[in-house]
Image 1 (cartoon, rainbow, N blue to C red):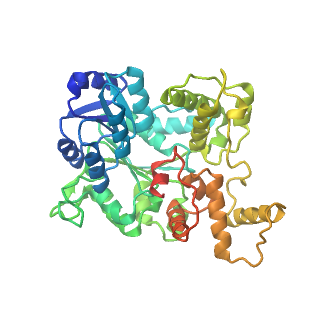
Image 2: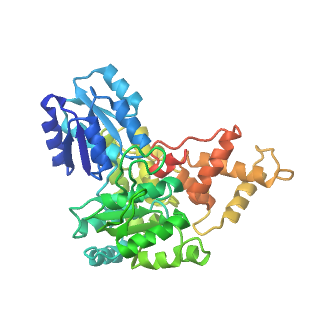
Image 3: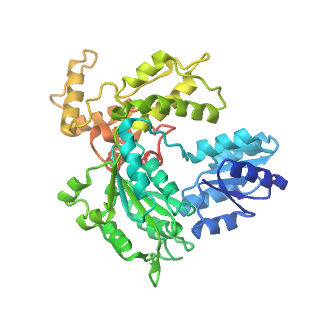
Length: 463
């Protein structure tokens, strides 16, 4: 993890930096907000910014939003000035950390806010051939395509490949292609010169240049627009890019990893994904199995997440009872590891006593059909449940298809506790389609379940 510290903090900078370094972070220090913005624009990326509360944090966060630089900010300051903490949080800071720094608090904030989890738990026999394949190809520069259902850990395996590669000392840069609108994704990937378009107030280094010498992960690449696919193909083939508004190509030296939760061969057949780009990316294919097929990993993963969120929330660690373990092992886990992580986060907050009891496990999606059911059958299931439920006196006959679709989408989102990714997977639609539908329903005055607090960047971008 890369931590950028902004400000002087009256000598406590060195202490905070040493603590973060001891926890495995790469730490950089800049005195001013303008200097920090210039560093981020120039490709010196950061996973987390820690800023002195006496500085203009509101200006920093607003500038990051305006220039679409996605990095969380935490505020820190001397003593326990409650008003300063409130101002920082209202400005958009994720957390406030009092100084002098407490080692455990710094560690918990780094993990909870940056959410960079380097642990890779894979004890199930089904994972061993996958790990063996990763070990064999990690040292090469071959492009790798990681496929699998949403939440199976595709980004985790990509980080594993980076750490095992000869580029491990370089940057690991991620771009979520599903979370960024098409008109902004090009600038995010390739960068732009000052004045290239309205709002381009300064030169911005794109993710390709930021990842130079390291690894670039294109997450959910199947969501990328066809025009951008063509530009990406040239970058992969020629190993050079053009900034928006630039006058000459820029050479790049990266290792490219792409992920998709869709069947890319089917996307190619239906002309939604370029065949030539698919073969460029699919030099090595790694398929991540769903969590229900790697049951030996469920309990170790649950214990890992329980410890993680106990630390992040300042709560005591609690073991899982036998009844809790049995309940976890019998769940379908349609949302895979991400669903398990969210479940354990809730359990930590709800648990009482010395152990995590079954009553603290709030499971979702228990009535879903198995993986492989078509959107039509899911719709039929939802329709059937409405018809059979005597408490619901709203007949389907007489309703328009649009009304039925709207009710199905809103009910599914509510069932998923606001988790856009899970809802899109259940409905069999892309997260972009779900986003557009929810925006339409919101303008029509419908009440939409807000994104879950533990949602991913992609989910929050759909709100």
